[in-house]
Length: 128
Image (cartoon, rainbow, N blue to C red; front, top):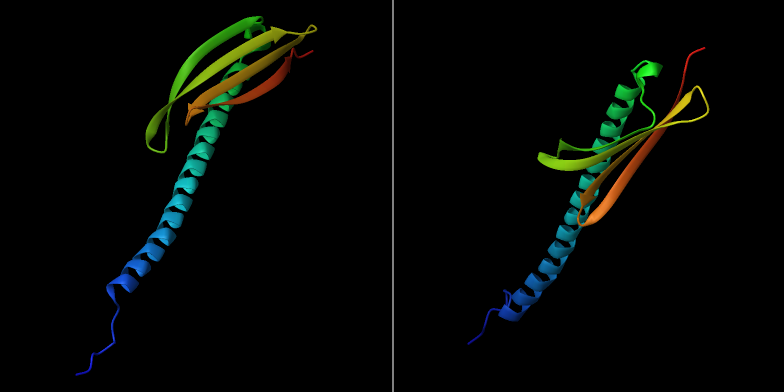
């Protein structure tokens, strides 16, 4: 009586499954890292757009209508990757040596229990 040894034993099959699972878990961790990294960049890009919009609105005003000193804080909801995200915007206008005003806009947001901030500033001078 002879046995045909042309297949896998149960132990060989289980070892192959364990090796396959370790490889797939590594691949899933890479995908998770990519999603977090892309979401962080999308949130930062939206903060840049929001800060740029606020700066353009302020700089589009005539010099005399730009209030200084002026401090304003507000929130803005934006759609990022198909979901709504809240951004906090702080605008601080200050008068410098006449006839110059400084516009400072700071946008902050939270992601994964971390606080991120983007800030832009611009000087505006009265035309002579």
